[in-house]
Amino acid sequence: MELKAIPKNFMWGGSTSAFQVEGAYQEDGKGLSIADIRSFTKSGQQLDTKETADHYHHWEEDLELMRELGMTSYRFSISWPRIFPNGDETTPNQAGLDFYHQLIDRLLEYGIEPIVTMYHFDQPIGLIKKYGGWANRQSVADFVKYADCLLTEFGDKVRYWLTINEQAVLVVASDMIGIHPDLPAEQRFQLAFQANYHMWLAQAIVYKKFHQQFPSGFIGPAVSYITTLPASRKSYDMMAAKQLEDFYSFAQMDVALKGKIPKYFQNELTKMGITITTQVGDEEILSNGRANYLGINWYCTTIVEANMDIDEKAPILQRMKRIEDPDLVYTKWGWNFDPRGLQYGLRQLMDRYGQIPIVITECGWSEEETLEDGKVHDSQRIAYLQEHIQQMAYAMEDGVNVISFNPWSFIDLLSVGDGMEKRYGMVFVDRTNFDSKEQKRYKKDSFYFYQQLIASHANQ
Ligand code: BG6
Image (cartoon, rainbow, N blue to C red):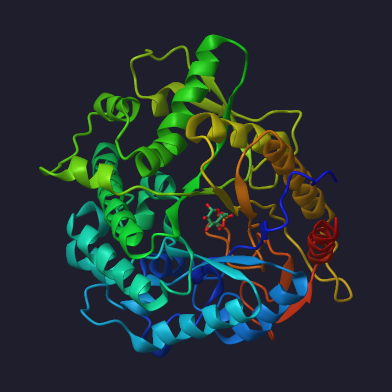
């Protein structure tokens, strides 16, 4: 591999999130989150959040594996309801804080930089029951209180923070923020985009406070960046791809980095008949609180064609169709293998945001896997890692400022959509949906591949 463009201080990591990996869903005072409640609706059909990979009890062993792998960063999330079980308490849950103190201290001892997400899909259900969650402006204050608490506790140990994971996903799949899926579509979208606005305000307030307290630290969003390609070279397909990518991914980055809601986004909302309730002073809040780096979750490309039967003035969500490219390999779940798309996506980020530091916070390949004689031969994941890292290095050669790569996921964990069937880890967790066995950990072939890559890069 040609990795010469990757500097020696580059952070080679791995990624997880709290509700997907920790388990211990009610231990030491933890409250329930919307992610727990959503998973319980499928409890009879697949794994739920109650135990998952039981990292809460296996964290020491897991960190030992990270050290053995040679990781120099670890991107994980803090469980919001472990800190504020109901969300509206005035004092945090000490046992929750203690858990993350010991985890972070051990990471630092091992020379692994913590990259910490404050909120990864798990708003306390208490806030949703009390006032409807993010759709209500009160959520802004409750998130800021939670973020303040994290920065007070961990701000002197953690240099890299991510506020909100995949905000656009929360808007599109709005049951993840407690908006009832049976509501009529217009009502759901109205609530979801109001919630989106509140999240923008909340993160802007946190960005501003953070820069004042920790001027040498980094804070930003973890954006779902789906590089969107046109199905043909026809300008109508190209325009549809651009509009979708702007609306879904770039709007999130533009607001965080430029401090202003872009006109193209506002126009889409108008076409959808959505009106956002704002208050005097909001524009200043957005403009005064900006991210100083970018987390991107990048898995694959999506290919889009314009639906020419629909008026060009209709919202982009109604005017486009996603198609499969027959030349690409897809997982069983419809995610393609298109590494050059990553190079292209990274180049687009440089075009738009210049030398902004970029952390690839997620990137990975899923498979159904079983253990054979204590081994997992995950050759497709190895190919995925190899080719995506190579394409990232090419983008860096051309000037893109990537500072860290964190594959999803370090270890097998609960998939948001598909329980324990769909595995992403470099470490295999020996459990099934319904049988937790002993939760034994096994290194997959991809573990050894990544270990060797990190070591050889260090010696180049
Ligand atoms: C990202 C999320 O969208 O994709 C992760 O940040 C998630 O939490 C990952 O696990 C993969 O999605 P899924 O549905 O396969 O778990």
